[in-house]
Length: 98
Image 1 (tube, rainbow, N blue to C red):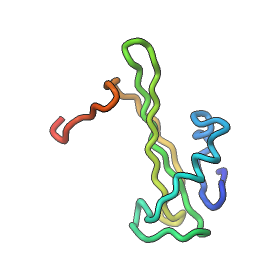
Image 2 (cartoon, one colour):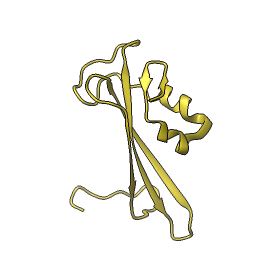
Image 3 (tube, rainbow, N blue to C red):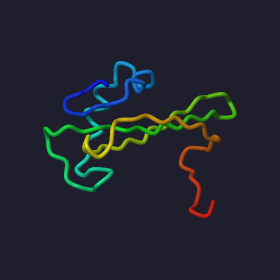
Image 4 (tube, one colour):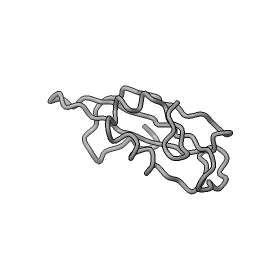
């Protein structure tokens, strides 16, 4: 498991972010743990989890969306999930009712 500064992350993230991975990890800063809600301190061990959603537009253009979560390493390990989703035009999202 790679660590950038004090944030552990899943090495599969690099296949999506390439040379930009370390910068992405370093800037995915948060002030509170996504699991317990406690404050995150500057040098404590943290984990980054990333949810990736992939979709393809009708013209064949591939879209990848990243949603990241930072937490204390003792609250959760780093992880990466990949989901396929139907394409939606930018700016549109589902309402809570579907």
